Amino acid sequence: MKTLVVLDFGSQYSQLIVRRVRELGFYAELFPHDTSPESFSRLDIGAFILSGGPSSVYDPRAPGFPDFLNLFKKPVLGICYGMQLLAYSLGGKVEPGPGEFGETTFRVIREHPLFSGIPIFFKVWMSHRDRVSSLPPRFICLGETESCPIAAISDEDSLFLGLQFHPEVEHTHFGRKILENFLEKICGLPREWSPSHFIESEIQRIKEKVKEGRVLCAISGGVDSAVTAFLLQKAIPGKFLPLFVNTGLLRLKEEEQVLDAFKRAGIQFRYIDRSRLFFQALKGITDPEEKRRIVGNLFVEVFAREAREIGPFQFLAQGTIYPDVIESRAKERSSADRIKTHHNVGGLPEVLPFELIEPLRFLFKDEVRVIGKLIGVPSEILLRQPFPGPGLAVRIIGEVTEEKVEILKRADYIFREELGKAGLEKEPDQFFAVLLPVKAVGVTGDRRAYGFVVALRAVQTRDFMTADWTPLPPELLKKVSSRICNDIPEVTRVVYDVTSKPPATIEWE
Image (cartoon, rainbow, N blue to C red; front, side):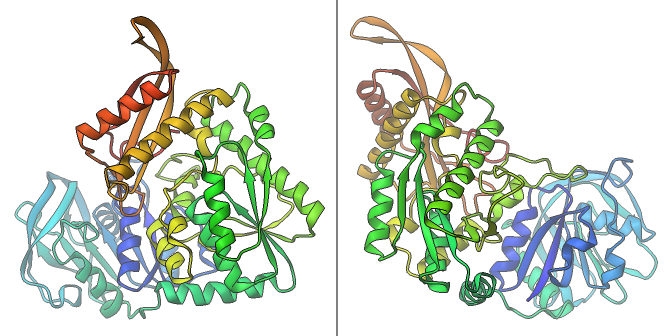
């Protein structure tokens, strides 16, 4: 399948480029700007996009132009910083300008396939301080704005193109059409990406990889691992066994709900309770990264032990998805820092007794749900709230204890229950409670109390790479707070998180 490679120079919109391209029916993947050419060997590359970024091309520490692009001889589209880097590296000039931030009007000044079917004037979204002041040799200017005379460029062969504005954001009118023109008219890429095509190709890939082997499938209680299990059922029925390990870190009544759904779907599985092991391993641990490593290592130990008893198994399948991969990727020279290690990616030990199978590794959350629906995953599983691999261990800030887990389980359940009663459980894309590592003074029964603080979090998001906090009704929040403090005597205070992503992440740890 022809692939558009998006090279990330640190833009907050880099993941959006990948999303928009896939929505148009083309396949794309995201890589750090300094990825080695060898890393692309598995791909049939059709084109490149250079993302925006916060740097200036004149900064000695700024990311440089990837020299390997000249080796591939594929069309390259630079966006924002990507355009400036392209122009500067090929002999043009970039200088500080008045800067443009937000919506402005773009004017097409020269006909070009990139703007085919698009009006001469349209609104675009800008976010830049520097600007291209002089074109490289054999380049032409395609468009301008009031503050930026060179806002779109192309070389004479349409091999290198640049846009100072961001076509990937909703604020840019005709942005999708511009990306479509680049991919279809300039690059000549076929529309090969769709959920149904993914299902067919992934089933075939799993069959070819597993052959006569057997697969142990990790079930965490979340959407991703469930979709992974159902996909394996389609590909290799009878050759895999879902193993549901109760770590003690699940939400209230979660194990019963998941087990019931799998039974009704006719998928045989194995359930074991190892909560005591996990609580012992987490005793005294406060660092979130250490929690992830402990949970990841212990998961593998438990799976390896079970595999020896009921195996042999040659493969371990898990529900890693693309945001897990992107946020966990940490390279020394990458322009984007690692946000956190995900259990499914960075929480596992380097040496595994299995070969990994991660069929959802390059999918976003909404794509996972679409594929799950197509392969028959029950809606009660498919519409479940996203849940981190380490479970409540990363929703308890500080040390994890059985007492704290029980408090958080009850608080989280009350939050979910009241949202359901209000008919709002589908309004936020994710909502949960967090137990904070501080205590606050309260009054219960005319007596001074000193109890835990619970934070409530509810967000709206499309792809879980960015998110806005959900403005829940004050009456609902008041009721949730009252119930938590009345029903859970250990809690004396409830707060509501009104931070978007970025700057925050969705999870607190």
